[in-house]
Length: 90
Image (cartoon, rainbow, N blue to C red):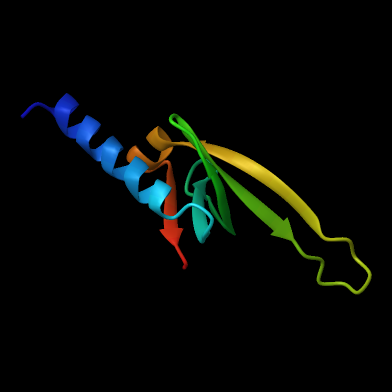
């Protein structure tokens, strides 16, 4: 089997896994350039054919600080190429 068919099969598996975890908590490991990574925990809120959306909440550690909620979208190819990694927490 050629590499193209292998990549298509891997992409299909990634999509199925992510769809199965919709609505659950995930941890994203994001590559921020050369040897820099950032870990974020959020909820996988929506899954579409070409991307998925994770909602993050920054809760202030200081008393009286306002909680901030924001979303970020990722493509399945980011996961396939390991530019971003997804870990399922639930």
